Image 1 (cartoon, rainbow, N blue to C red):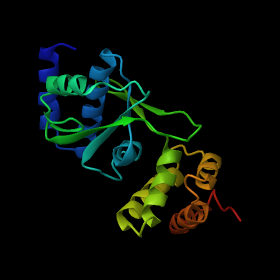
Image 2 (tube, rainbow, N blue to C red):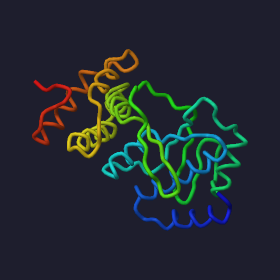
Image 3 (cartoon, helix red, strand yellow):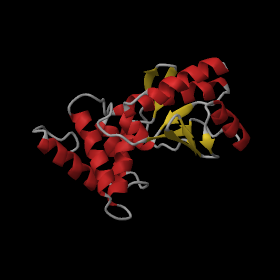
Length: 207
């Protein structure tokens, strides 16, 4: 992607007023630029939930990880983000009015595939929603109650229960039972609560 093309894209991103569409555009741009240098990026955290729920939850920034342990060096990060007019570093930059955080190598225990989204400038890879859900439930109760994480998890659950997002509930159960999380009772309780609100059954506790 040449400089002229990058400038044109950044101008479009800067003008975009819809926060979710802006995140999609920037994720696609960053992914394309890093891919040209041999690094595959994955959208994680609240940013991933925003893209998967199509804006039902908004994070306000863009969190990215490298798919493999072969992450760009500090110099490479600065050079790549510099091409995007990024201010800051070496892990957080402001680009086109949005903060972009590069958090290192992807950590995931999920067996389900990464989700893929066709972005305007190339493919966007998103961490598995099953991992995101279990992670948010854990954050909502440990080390202390954290209502924002709970509300985020509820929105992800609601989108999945409405059928707008494919969720492997067996994988959710498996992850929630793992020693790294140990959060199955809390997951079942929250999914049941959202299911009741939507007047449907809970896939984690069908009885």
